[in-house]
Image (cartoon, rainbow, N blue to C red):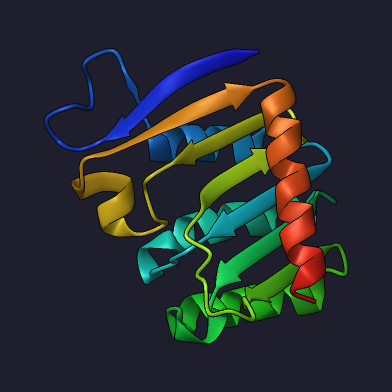
Length: 158
């Protein structure tokens, strides 16, 4: 297992610690078989990540995305996710709904069950650039476990 600290924030980036967004881009671009995404918030500034996911889908990568309260997300992002899932049968987008009213507050991206980015940053401009956020790049068995958790969440929210 390998763990690397990631950050966002204008005063922290560049001190030998990598930023969350470039690492997300790196692992999505390196995906060969599957990507899992569990997220609380997707704003229009997440369009770059959606475009990276679309390119991965075009390469045949299976993509599972679970989003908290999908209808409350940015309309452009919702439209892009719907378009992607309509175009590619191997892309699944699930609207997280807990019968007890709990929220999906996770911010996790897992690639090939081998690498995962987990942290406090939402997929938004503030989360990726201007806020002070912390995260981890995890490689190894815990990444597989995170993917299994996302699989479980998707099954109960079909």
